Image 1: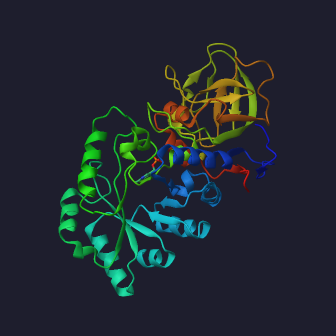
Image 2: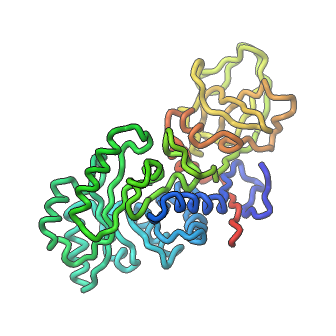
Image 3: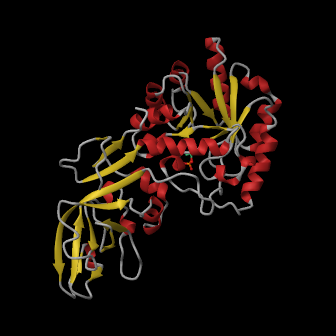
Length: 381
Ligand SMILES: *Cc1c(COP(=O)(O)O)cnc(C)c1O
């Protein structure tokens, strides 16, 4: 691991670290914003900015020029409002519990996805005699959150349901935008064009990290990337103009020789076929290194990079530890106390996800609290 002069955080007794390059995060957002101009570019910072630390990511994005943030929950809204006092903030989960009054007070715009929520927000606005803004989430085929077509038409036919409020944005979300060839993209685009036209003079938003790579037709007024800002590649085919911003490393605790025939780890799933050297690394499934990334015989699992060399996981990933085969590394390359790289140096979050039968998003957002977060400050700070 390289130590950067602009780095903040303390590694002294850490078992593992996540290093987040705030300048790179800002640069990624700027590159996405440039790609979609004249559409606007927001930033999705839900789930503590994909696990990277909303307290550092939101201000860094604001310094890069981002003024529109999407979070999911009321608690995240409160945090985001403190960190970005003047930004537009949208709450994707909509009105949860009794959050409406807090949203009104904080100037947070709920993303409404049921008629009941539309009516509730409208009533709150009327009781306060304030036309407070909200977004409307319409479903165009994901069948997850969003007003179904029937309710969209009902609302359009009876605008009185929205009488008290100000409709600020109409949005929908794509199911298959990670595959540009999937005809579902086109179907949802057409559905969104048709349904959003029922709310004239309202800003529109359809695309996330993968959708914005489908071309300008998908950009509308505002795009909502999250993953790509943090350096993730959401599309299977069209690479986003971003670079990795996150590296993850964990301490090598021990290096040991294992004789042929000996096994490594729980349930003895890996057996040495030759005289082997095994390094034990201080990160496990409690830290978000998925147990499904274990490498039972015959199937490749996860990898680490040690002193520039790739070493494969062997045996089961356990709660606090993974074991890797360093037999093919030069003698002395793996030293206890040094760090092994889990993500970085050519190992992407997508690689880590693939090795565990999941996606990079899940790897990123589940990295646990035992990793010390280190931040490389951006230049403008
Ligand atoms: C999470 C989310 C996004 C961001 O998605 P990425 O793939 O991370 O860019 C955008 N819109 C909605 C509705 C979301 O839930």
